Length: 76
Image 1: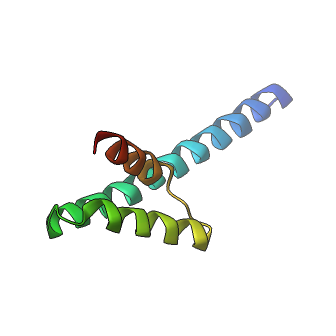
Image 2: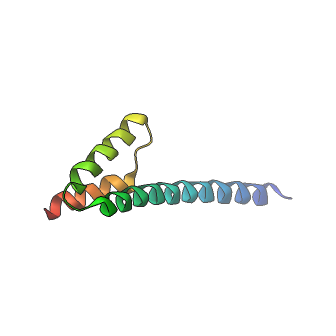
Image 3: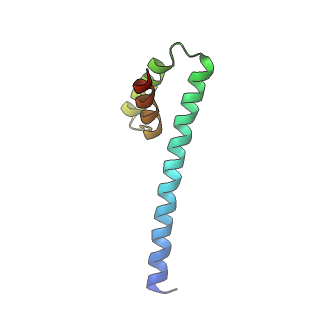
């Protein structure tokens, strides 16, 4: 295997890992949103805000969940 082929494989692997992490973040955020929607719409926004804050405090913030909460706030 040539140096260029090895570099291409490493770059591809890094790109795939980043995509996998982004995908996992979206799935995690979607699961949280769906759980809260299933409980009822009355307190969805406050609960989602709290869960987003908790994830952020744990160091595992969800970009998807943060964006979803921002959009819900803008719509209300």
